[in-house]
Image (cartoon, rainbow, N blue to C red; front, side):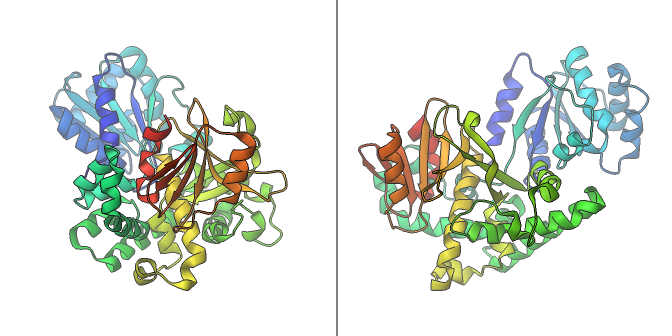
Length: 434
């Protein structure tokens, strides 16, 4: 299975001076597979250590963090000597042993020749609980579910990916029904690696749903196992409210939809916990469309999205026939699914910061504002072919952005400073705006 993150790992390996690398991401997005695959492909040997229920390795890091002693212990565990130049050392579920996380500082300072990659599904949670973190001594790589581009590759559609990569929109438009069919499948299957692999192998929608249910159940177990008992009910209520939040016309997160009369301070920790786990993405409102958008971030107004569009469709019990064949009752939720899909693709794009915008009276909204470093780009999202965008036109007339984006099921079309980018080509945003 092709993952774009593999290219980032090879760039890390090629550096003359590099720090230990930490891969961040939600549970079951493929961190362990990626690390092992990279170790097998790029190194003569790979030492894999999971700290989950590993007494020997837990005890190794307790007495002190002397690197010579640690390497000796790891060699004994692996059963062979470690050649720093040709061996990748993998620490998995590293949050289970805080001392192992702290040791990365000493590996970086005292033994930078060792090549170490780490991952942990609950790393963000562990850090907020006071784990000593090697600030400035490590590098990071964020891993998300498969993007639509990666999904197409998994489905054996390399040539379709190539058309978009080379910007051949004339040819892509000729085959747009194929792209739209793949996109509908992606709305259902999503990008969780196990679900994608299963669907690519047998095309069974029911089996895909079963896998997604297991993933959601595992997340629920994590709530009970790792979160403080007093906030578990709030985490569950907040998590289960997200589909309803996204279906609203104004998708700003409302605590009152979690529980009648609920207030922000009652759910702040629950929200932080879900964000730290990588299970939800928080997109803040920008008060003004000016660079840098971070300076105009409205901390009280935000939208919440799930980690994966397939899990969202599973949570709502969306049937494949409703999604694939279309249904009048499905119209309202189609917009929510489309926005979730677009945000999920935006998260995989390095150097793109994502916000949204509304005017002071909340009568006009731009679905996403993109800070691409050199410009602010408004992005309007449409679930179908309807290209009427009153808010986008009003925004463009007032703020005069160099480029405005509208993404829909319509064909690629450039009109002066407005670009209609098909939803299936959303991954082309970096190439058209940067």
